[in-house]
Structure formats: C-alpha cells, structure tokens
Length: 193
Image 1 (cartoon, rainbow, N blue to C red):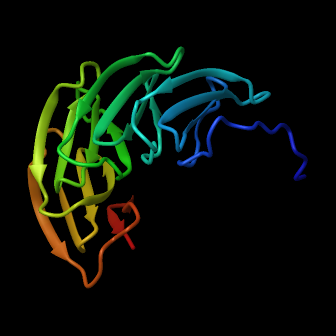
Image 2 (image 1 turned 135 degrees about the vertical axis):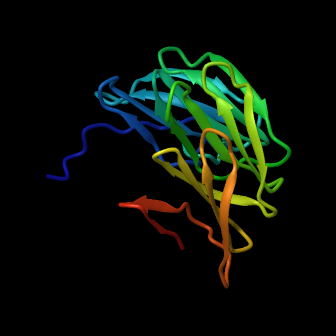
C-alpha cells in the first residue's frame, strides 16, 4: 500500500544497500562513517553498531549462518549477527569494493571477495583463514557463485570463472568495457554488465 512503517535517522548516510534477515528480524546497512549498523525490521530500533575504523563501508553486507560479512577499506569483516562483535577480519592487498558471495559447496562455508589488488580471495567462514588467493589481473568489481563455481567481473572487462573450493580459474573472457556490476548466474548462464 505504500504506507510508511517506520523511518530512522542514521549517524551517517548509508553507503550500501541493506541486507535483510527476515527470520532474525534484522536489517544491516553499511555507513559512510565506516560503521555497520543492524536495525530491527519491526520498528527501526538500533540492535547494534560496529565500527570498522575505515570509511566508508562500500561492500553490500551478506547475512549467512548467523554472521554478517562485509568489507571496508582493504578488510573483510565477519560480524556476529546477534551482537555485532567481530569474529574475524582479513586484510586484502587493496580496497574491498566488490560484492561478496558466501557458499558452502561441501563441508566448508567459504566467503569470496574481490579486491582492488586484482585478486579474488576465498576465506574459510568460521576462522577467516585464507583458503585461496587467485590473481585475476584487474580490480575485481563483482562476485557470484553457484554449485561450487564462481564468476568474477573486473573494472577492466575481464570475466573469469572457476571452482569455489580451490579458487582454481577455469576460464577468462575479455569484454569491450569494464563490468561495474556484479555478475548473476541463472540456470548455468552468466549475465553481467
């Protein structure tokens, strides 16, 4: 109906789209001041806030398995969904501005993220330990995954695909222009732009 349910003024402007966990009654958004904020879906009340110490949070948060994953500056953060405390953080070699993907292809939950250092990282979710670092050769702008396969896009028009569990790259394609948005995988077909 378009009826406003609630509104809230944040300490700083939001710098990401929100991530939602309807079962957990939670909306998580990154702020231009480097804070990650969790709000109640019911009334907008602040549940927790976590300062990354970086500015701004530009990686869309992903909520999976009781954790919130996001990036700010050159670092990936794993925050406890219940209280916002950092379980771990992992510094990459450049700004983390790509989307993240989280997948559990077999026994390990893997957080995948690209970096402006031209690498694609796979981090083991419970600990943040690096599973792989795959050089892509250009700043990574987007990540998608499905069925133990990943697809990354870069600002210089390289699209690459490989295996989630190892980071091994299977193929690359060059496009005429950089892909500034994340790729999408639907029924085995990759879409990007």
